[in-house]
Image 1 (spheres, rainbow, N blue to C red):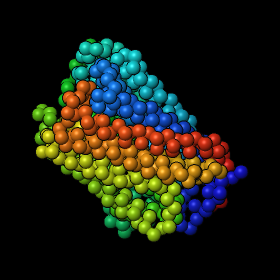
Image 2: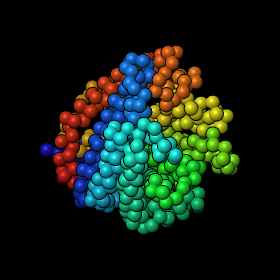
Image 3: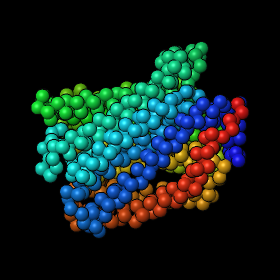
Image 4: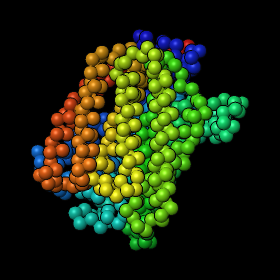
Length: 507
């Protein structure tokens, strides 16, 4: 039985692109993409339980030993970044595969390498007792009093394999896109960009393809920075060389901060791919879209150092560059994406099922989390708020209500297109529970941060505990909403899996 949705003429005169290519050449890629999404979001749910455990501890409801708190905090932080990035990169592979030939084998190999990395991280934290935080700032990991050097090296090995998996994915994606579009000039629409939109001789990439190219370059840079950090650390552990602490902090934050940013911007790319299918309007590659996203290539790699404002040895020029880049990286993509999305939605007659609701939720989560991040990147504000709960507040906002909502929304879209089973109507209620629970949970981080409650403390004073106690019921609501959405997806997943091999769409 074929899906009534897949028979819809998405690749019609309106210029919309279906998931399945007319020759079904992307069927195997769609299956890998589904695995990326399901494994990534499944891991996110497990990491979320660890987050609940920490809030119970900070609220004084369930007391766990500080040594275990920091293990859990480290695994929760590293695991969340890795899980969400895995999910959204899977979605991005599906989005571009209908028009760009990707290799399912390369994507599977990248996934296995990624798995090896995450396995090392789990062993380092839960077995080895590593609790130095996901930032693994040198020299703390090699001087741990409650974990061994082997545990620290296992953590570093995990990051090395994760960087290699990301590098393989991004190199393959960039190569495939450049080949499909006839080179980088066409892929990034550079003639169109520098002629201010007047030179239209080259065919323009669709927004998801442009974004995939941008993200791939930044992903390659992030993975390279990771290896420039990790290799000297291994040589230092072997007694071969010493490592400059400021160099180490710059490279590890360029690696880790960029990976976290990638999740959000890849997730935004999924909105460009899926939202037109629900509004019936194509998302056109305008000059503003090209300009905003081409700028991301540079800006995403220069804003990480707002985490080094407290480091007096950092050159002042880099501190100022970080502040400027932190503003610049957010505003163009915000404005272009939000205006573009609202233009597509306005009077489109969109039917607000779970998928478009999740995509819309993600946009607003991205906006509010981004505004919190921009505020934190302002130097006078940063000096007051950076070591408070304000920081987990802003990144939980654009992660939980931004990138994660984008990934859930895109998975619902894929299942909607590939399955012959319709989504349960009541799933829209689950999205509301997700949004309300997530907003209440995050609001307590913001309120605590505004009241100077410090972050990364295992033991909270009695007067700090009320923020976590208020947050816990919202986490329960959030968990119920996510469980509901998971159940709806699970009952239709096999049908969607079979749908990847279904009859090709008529172009």
